[in-house]
Structure formats: structure tokens, C-alpha cells
Image (tube, rainbow, N blue to C red; front, side, top):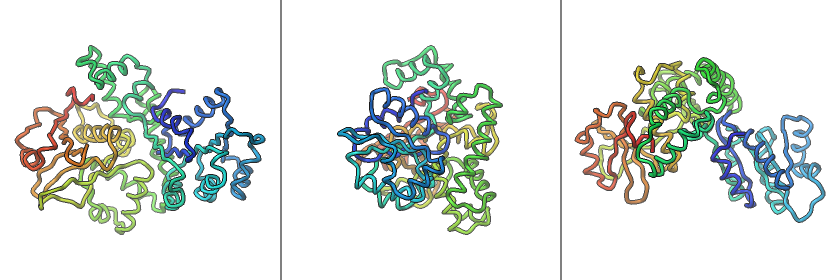
Length: 400
């Protein structure tokens, strides 16, 4: 099993009494990661019990009483048992199940569970499990993991050296840029990355769009499948744009509450992220509408069915901006990422609040000749503690 960065975080949390809850979009590798954990714990002599909730008899038993888990655990001694539960949302009341086992048996059990969006959407999850769980979100592969899954360790070595400042320039940069173009086109779902043929990659992405997203809808209680898909397609075509819910509702002939609910589900299913506006001083700054980005570019591209080579794409600027957003989410918390825009059209793609007093601003232009610092003088004069950087295709800082 190929390693994921999140695995080390999960291992580090095992000594803690809190439940470890692994969440994320479908097909990102949560079940695979849980299997690896079970194998590694068993190798070190730890006590491990794995519950497969697709077994109807087991599910019925655990629904009747959470303490039924002890039927499957050897006679207790002073050591804890690691209880691994895949797809915990299959339980009738997973929040209550986890709460009771923590309150009554935290010293005897360490629970590591994966949960789908339906479990995470449950508002009881936040209220009842406060202080009893730590959340780990597993995204699709980042670019480093992408290279590892592609067996391109030499490219990964040089990329990490560039990011660490050890290497200024690499003779492998042409291959790194080629790999990055593939990543921008097909995204980071593990099953898609492992396919070697572009046709097979696209077929996998169609399966993700048509099958697994549909399961998200069913679990979240979305009834109008057609309009939900149309909303996703509209958002995919508007990557990096302001999210105007009134306009979306009118276009799709949806009520405003239904539109808001669809957007909420898409966020909780880990398909999209919304970036809020940054403002401190200017009265004309827009402060209401967020910008929308997809968490995986492969899913975004299959929604608009567009897989042309990067240089030929009409949306290559939006694609690059979406990648920069994904990269920033790997380095900063969501609430640190903002964008800046004024009523008279001045705009900066990203404002990163690194501290309470400043940070950096990032403007993404596919063509470096479009990066004119004079156009952003209003921002830099107003916010001197947020120096602006320009990212463009094949620019060295895009690899950082």
C-alpha cells in the first residue's frame, strides 16, 4: 500500500484517548488507509479489532447496543484495544455510539473510524462529540503524493528539494512541469492517478461523477438529482468566480433555500471550497459573496467534460488559479485564505493572513506578461503588510 501523508498524523494521535475520525470525499483512500493501520498495528503486537459494517448481523448487533463491541474483543487486561470501524455512518446513530463508548470505556478502547459526508453533515456530530474526537480530513492526492503514486521518486526528490530551498534549479524541471500538467488535467483521485491511459483516466472520472457523487446525494437527502448535477456543472465552469447564489437559483429554477442546501452538501461532501473576501479598511470592498474552487481538478474537468492540453485550454488561467488554491489549503487553514475585491473592479486572487498583522497576497496569471504590478497599487498601498506575489505557468514559485 502506497503511503499517504495523513497516515503519520493518524499514527501520532493513537496514544490519545480521543476518537480518531477520518473523513473526506469518497474514493480518496480512507478504507485503504484503515487497512494499512490494522496491518501495522498487528505487526507491532497491538490488539486490533476491525468491524466491517457491511455485515448486516454485526450492524444489527451494534445498533442494539454499542457495548456489543466487547463480544469481539479478547478478555481485557491492562492494554487498550484498537477498534477500527470503516464507514461508521452505517450505524443507526453513529454519534451516540461513539459518545457512549468514549464516556464509558475510553481507557479500554481506542476507536479509529472513517465516516462519509452523511455522518459529518449530522449536526449532532459536532455537539455531542465535542472533546471526544479529533478530525482528520483525507483529500485526494496532493502533487507530491501524485508523483509517488506515479513511481516518479526522482521528480519527487527534486520537487521537495526545491520546496525546501536546498535546490534552486533542477535538470528534471521539464518532467516536473509535464507531471503537473497531468495533475491539473486529471486530478488526484488515487484510482485515476494509477491508470496509465488517458482514456481510462477519463472513464474513472466519469464513474466518480456518476456513481459516487450520486451516493453523496442519496445520503444527504438530495431529491432533485438533475438540478444538483447542473449546479455542479455551473460551478465547475465558474471556478474562481464570485458565487452569486441568487443568480444560480434563477438559472436552475431553484428556491434560495434549496440552492443553499445544495452548496452546503457539496462542501460537506468535500467537493468544493468557498473562499471568503478579505477586508479591513475600504468601504467599497465587497464583503458578501465568496469565490468557489473545486477540491479536485479531475472532478472539476469531468463535470465540464474538458480534457484538452493545458496550453490549448480557454480556461487555463482558472485551472491554474484552482491549483494554487489547492496548494494553499495544504499550507494554511481555511480561515487564513481570503481574496480581495472592490466594487470598482480591483481584485487580488488570494490574501493569506499568516499573522494578525500581515501575510502575503497572490495573483495568478497563466501568462507572466499579464502580471503588471501597477494594476495592484491600490491594494499594496492600502495593505503594505501583505506584499503581492505573482504566480504563472512555469514560474519557479509555482512549484513551492
